[in-house]
Image 1 (cartoon, helix red, strand yellow):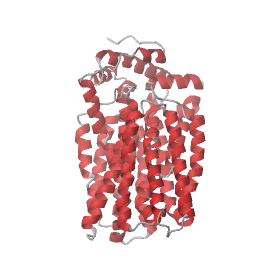
Image 2: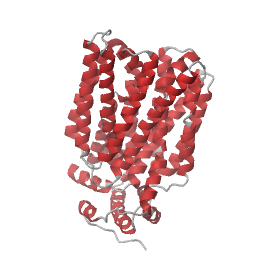
Image 3: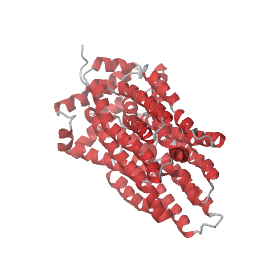
Image 4: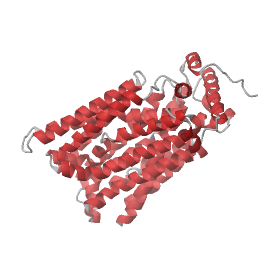
Amino acid sequence: MAQKLDVTAPAERRKQLPAIGRGAYNKRLGMITVIATFGGLLFGYDTGVLNGALTFMSNYFNISPWEEGLITFILLIGAAVGSLLGGKVSDRYGRRPFIIVLAVLFFIGTLGAALSLQYDVLLAFRFILGLAVGGASVTVPVYLAEVAPFEKRGSLVSRNELMIVSGQFLAFLINAIIGNLWGTNPDVWRYMLAVAVLPAFVLFFGMLRMPESPRWLVSKGCDDEAHTVLKTMRSLDRADAEMAEVRELADQERQESLGSWKEILSTRWTRKLLLIGFGIGIFQQLTGINSMMYYGTQVLEQAGFDRNAALGFNVLNGVASVVPMIVALYIINRVSRRSMMLTGFIGTTTAHIGVGLVGILLPEDNLLRPWLLLVFILAFIAMMQATIGPLAWLMISEIFPLRMRGLMIGATVLVLWLTNAAVSLVFPPVVAALGFGTFLLFAVLGLFAIVFTGKCLPETGGRSLEDFEESFRTQSV
């Protein structure tokens, strides 16, 4: 028998939700988070591995600087395509089965790239890896946001970003170890790439035992199955209360026929949310964080370190990502999302100004110059990964309504990846033209990001996904 629909106002009902409590269901939720975030680990490793491997690949294939850049660029274009298709596919067929398919793509792309004997073949498999990276960047945060209770959603979803930066850190560390041990071997880059096969196995076999998102099941009319899944991750009273809230919003969206691009673009509040999502994605990438993740070794060489020192110090970039991210997981549910994001953009913009001024004003033969640049670069990365990094992916997974969540996130992450690709493509020639003045350009873009955050960003912290949707819908009518 269908349960009676609870029509209590969402904000009021949220206050009445039973406490999460303690039980075996918390361990179940933790295991789901660990397994799903291996998609983030693969995302991070496959985007970070070139930062150290690219030089060896260039020597092996005897390619030009433009062709070097294409190895990075082709993955990012694949990620853009994968994010757009991934949102739509996961909306139609489910979050869990799509993540399983992504694990297969990670395996094929990794193994194919590591075994490539020709440059063109390498690019083809890097594109396949990009499809997997883009699909994971859309689907894993949504899956986590939809299974998490609102009290823990910030930290659980942000664990995916922790796994992303951990994957990048592992890539830097493994590259440094393998490069120093077997750097004279022309095939050394293959070993660096092949390491990612292992987490692909974990993701595939792990997700076979994980449940589908209960909120996705409700969106497809599978209420009984959704309720059964939710009870494995909540106490019985809490599962019943959340189901009432999810059902109400799903029924309302069905009545409004929300779920297609026509409805999204013709409805004022959904159109506004889409533009906010675009802004979050664009400004996150315009910090230039991924330029440091892809070209960090080269930047450190330009700062004045020799190649071996740059390769070693580049590992600090990974440390400066992981440690602040752990701090972010602790505080992200305790502070305002908007305030934390605003603090992040102010901090990264300040660090950019420091890098730019030191790089321009101090002569290259100044002994302090490389060390001061390293300090400001690490400060930029630390501030970015403690605030903007996790918050951007978290808020993108939170702000969109249930029936069109995958579609709108897919479009948003498409814009994010295209911005990433554009910045990564122009970064080397802009640095060649402007030197460390490039970071002053990033600082100017940071000022626009500060204005956007202060004026446009909604607050999503401390609220269920349904509560935020209902209040934003009401305020925007």
